[in-house]
Amino acid sequence: MIKVLLLLHILVELSAGLLFILAPQAVPGLPEIKGVGLNHLASYGYAALALAALGGSTLFYYYREGALSNGLFTLAIFHSCISIAQINTPLIPSMYIEPMLVHGLFAVLFWRYYWRER
Image (cartoon, rainbow, N blue to C red; front, top):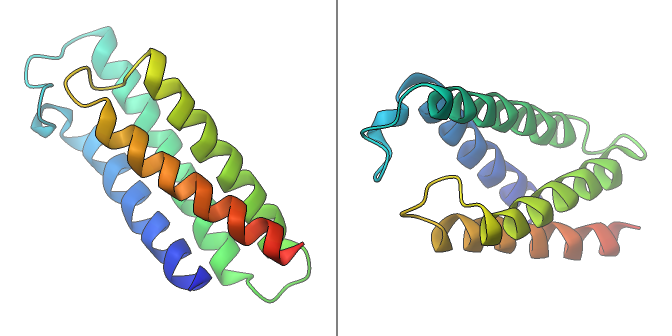
């Protein structure tokens, strides 16, 4: 199940990253975004790609000692922080509940598997 969770995380972050970098206006609620807002979304997109790479590295080195627990811990922290940040400053003003729930669910699952692996 942990491998499926990591794969799902990779797909979600990779998709979000590419979408925010290549076509941010395609996101519902953001067709009129310009200037600094585009830069902010691109930054989030690159961060999402980095987290997808971390998930890929964690999956690739699954059996190497320490790789899984370190990856799960980092991903759990990231998803927890993004979920909390969504409460105060949503990245997409018209969509603040959905990203918060997705990141919150990932956070709970990554924390669960992290504590089980320790």
